Length: 80
Image (cartoon, rainbow, N blue to C red; front, top):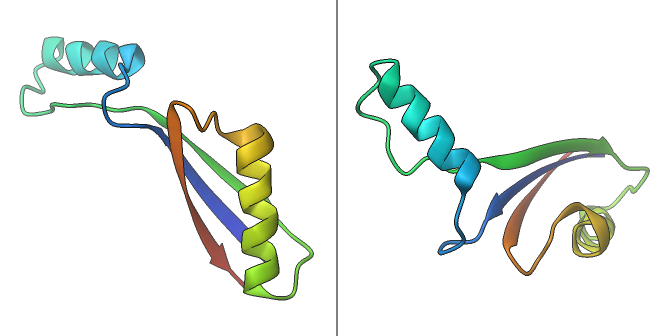
C-alpha cells in the first residue's frame, strides 16, 4: 500500500521560506501570488494489507518522526 503524506505549518506559524518565495515571485513579475506556504511531501510503501492498519502505522510515523506536531499538521492519503 502506498502512503502520501502532506505536511504543512499550522496557521499562525511564521513561514520565512514561504515569505522569501513570495518576495522572489513578486520580483520576477508574478504579482498575483500571495500567502505562500511551504511544506513537505513524502511518499512511502507499506506492507500493510488493510487501510486501517496502514493509517495507524503512518500516523505513528508522523507523530514520532516525520512531522513536528507542535507547529505542523499533516494529511495522509492511502492508495493500493
